[in-house]
Length: 228
Image (cartoon, rainbow, N blue to C red; front, side, top):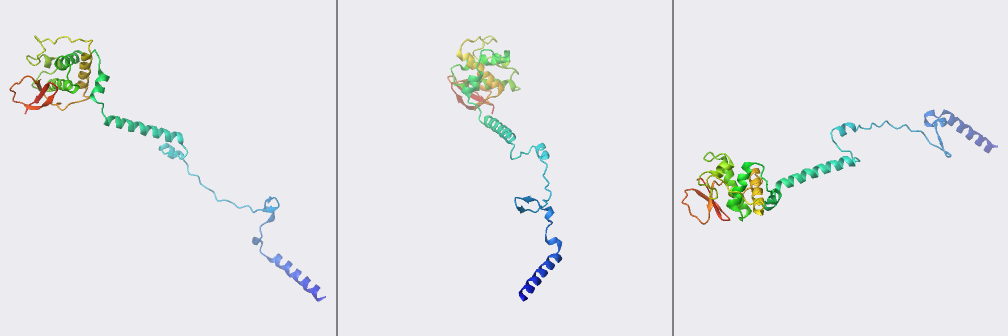
């Protein structure tokens, strides 16, 4: 009898405790979705703000997944690098001559220059031919000489191949003429230069004029000078 009374008292106390427990301690069962046989509470996630990328794209920035834009930028940088390397590494004179060789100078002045190179230096080293062309260019730019290639070459007693103010006709089918045309083009365009680039005078090494000039040096069969 006493045991039964103790069990009944315990049950009554338990019931009373459940009824007075705060409602906030037990989630509302109706709000819990059923997954299998378990009850899972619904948890509200905070709002996540996604940063806009349009502004970055407008500024030219690359997104990590934009492979096409990355490839385009890489190609552009590669082209710029190639142009820089090409500009820093000029072509050698034989390559330039091969590129500019021809039989038809573009005008009378270039024809005179090519003929002077042909008659004065054919068979000479290429830098020697270019140095003679540079002398003609320098004279045409100097106040003490005529102001055109043809006039410089035809000036009285300046070039031994000129007779009566006339420049002879070269063999325009020869390799030497094609080279002379190339050298004239290279000199006129400034594509290459020599150590005699400031010379105003030259003579063959088998003569000894008594010039009071500054000797610069020799290339091939010619010795080059400038004013002191």
